[in-house]
Length: 175
Image 1: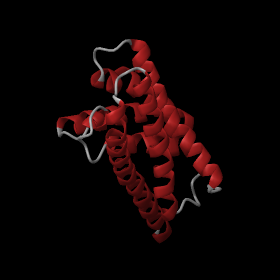
Image 2 (image 1 turned 135 degrees about the vertical axis):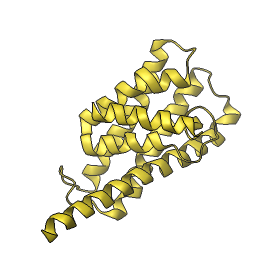
Image 3 (image 1 turned 180 degrees about the vertical axis):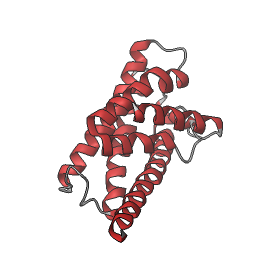
Image 4 (image 1 turned 60 degrees about the vertical axis):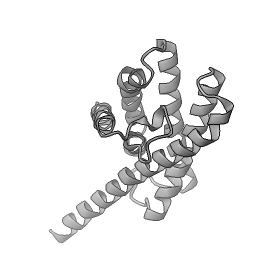
């Protein structure tokens, strides 16, 4: 439930300041909700992904695509959530990162983010293209824009998480 609320709040705040339109257009350079999505899948795994899916299906996607059917909202929510979740699971296995993330290194974060960002943007735009929401001429610019916004949003949250964990480790060591 935490990740659902956090995801929705970050989306609404981003929308308020103009950073939430990367999902639909090619206008946002930093898409912070992508960072929450990635962090939820990294920290909360399946439960985090479920929270993101709920927030995406009930709030985020209907806000972006208000005139679409629930089946469209379901498809976009599944694509955005499953692509991030499966990317995180595969990256954790590839890098041999333990379940408690104790051996997660700073240098692995950009790769995890890049894998998740690339898979999400790829499947998202393939879907939008298949349902005639995006013209072929728009695919590359929108894809690159989304990759940029999602990657930067992901790095902000991933780096913040890593700093928080390291501060907490140090704090516990000092005592």
